[in-house]
Length: 139
Image (cartoon, rainbow, N blue to C red; front, side, top):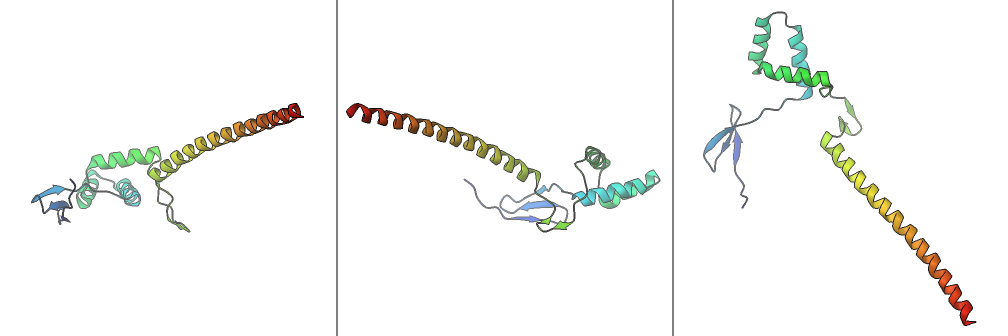
């Protein structure tokens, strides 16, 4: 049975679950532009002390930057495009995948419909031929 739980995010990034009376950590999410800005600032740092200060100031771990650099190298971390008539950016990857599956399903349905129409045409022609031959026999 599902029930609604009152939750509140506290200052130290924890979710307070009032019904259970406990606090749980909240996963942080970083925007692409933020990741790219931090990577650019990291590259501008000339000493390990400056890099450590950057990580402390932003509350980040070096492993995050390693992941972000890999994402950038693979091309999945690109700057967010500017605004266009549809709003900010394009469709999400999930939306594109959903539309791709829907498109494939519709293509299958279309091919089935075309096959049914073709069979109906042949059946019509056959019945028409039988009808004419039956009329010829009765005359």
